[in-house]
Length: 440
Image (tube, rainbow, N blue to C red; front, top):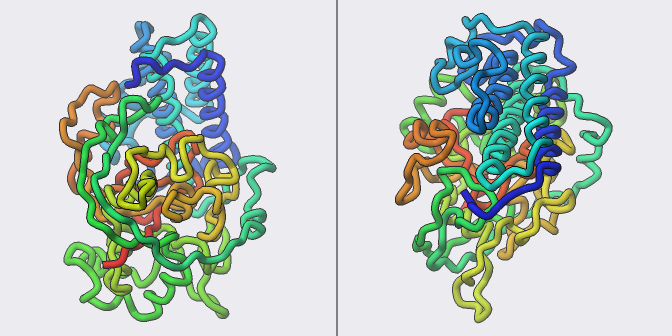
């Protein structure tokens, strides 16, 4: 935690309100029966997830800052994700939709009241931000759950118009950039306003020179792999990847289907023509790895990816400078002209869009549009200790999961930055994930 960073109560109230309004928008159009979902590893019951989002504020804001009881009796036995197994969430005596929304409203009103009573210190600021960003993560989960369940496109208002995505255009962005390598500080530094525990702390790593694609792999590029029988060729897959491929019977990305005039893609509850120059999305780590083997390429490591996004060429042209950017384009926060965030277009745009968001080395869309798989397993950085208020955020998941970087079209812009580490099981295809490649 940055012990000097504080936000005024008015700003925190704005963030809390924005996160809660987005959460409610993501479910407002769903009928009660749509909130009852089949038991699947990759979704949660909608009512459980709504209650959990409120419970997080109840625990990490209200209880830690002085409340003596939860605002829903027995809430800890319903919504504590660290104690309630995923499959058990379908068998809980969950409150009704109306009761759940009433609990969310009570928690929200209490949080806003507290913010109206005094200006928060740095510790309190951190807890409010943690709760907001946690809700943002669940908002993205609601979005890809709707895709998984073939629900309609979320109704997020007139400013969120999918038809505008085609107007951005910009097409493909082929080619590689040369990265000089060198000594790089991987991870977050204590001066950042907010970091999660798995980002701590920046440490020196040595990176050899390499070449990396200017943009993520597109649908058109991935379609060539599919057409070349990539899913049927054992030699392209790792052992675990081939086991997954055979077990699932996968022959193409999960939401693709063949139409009379080419590939179609299911976008929520509608079939659309496959957008050739948009990044391939909803592919898992095994699929990304197999594509790389087919193309004679490889996935970047986490350190390589972060170097490309953060580093600047040294003034003398040899290696990299000491300055590390917070975002690919610099230290200013995301803006609509730099990245595809916040569900503005309700889907991906062409990989050539948003040139003003390029990194110093000329890589585009390193944050926004689509999460990017890396070659790296999710492990703690040197010296990691469990001192985070949310102790179960990272520690239980180190090991088998793979690191994703960047952020997707449904990610909130306030969450993403170069050091942020997302992580997921290598078989997950429901998340908004794609990848870019490096030369071998």
